Length: 245
Image (cartoon, rainbow, N blue to C red; front, side, top):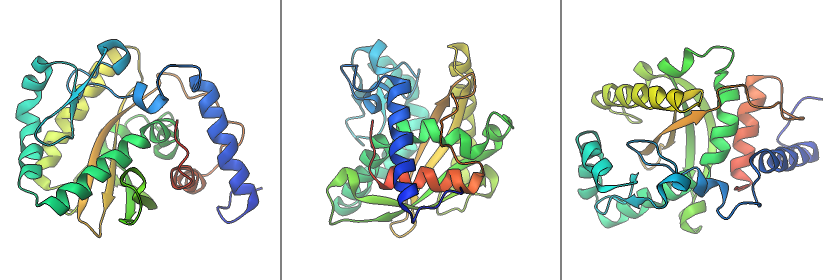
């Protein structure tokens, strides 16, 4: 049976996938929700569990760090984005903050299902040249952390990303950050890093996130769809159903 997002089968499919993700990660048996356990320092990628606490940049409220030293070390690459937020008006700053909250809410889902959409294990080189682009629609009437929904998921070459998503001057910095994160993650037993971008075209806003993936292929989920198009649809449906871990 093929996967269709307009059927009762699809609803059962999303529920089953969510249950398996929670089981595989032990969600519910730990003191912190999975999405908080997966929070890590944006410079040294130390997870919250090892850092004890993480602090966000007091100026932009975006990036989070495990220490003042990491924040200082990250400043040269963080400054352009931080300056951008500082020059926003109150309305756009609030919209961007909502986008940051939405992104953090669904990081575990993208971490688990994103590699199957990118087909990382079949073609590892894809992480160096392509990004997972999640296109969003804005719903300002909802509370902040659920004020977006996914309308499409695309694979884009980093050199072909529209300027409205990522300014050409930023691509080089993102490549450098991606290479550094990939090296550090591999050194700590992970498979490496891949790039995910959440972009709301109507608002002209985007959030870039460096994600980690497992060294060995993720245990096969019992109902994982077979085609890339179906896996993209599944990722959309899990996020839009507001399954969080």
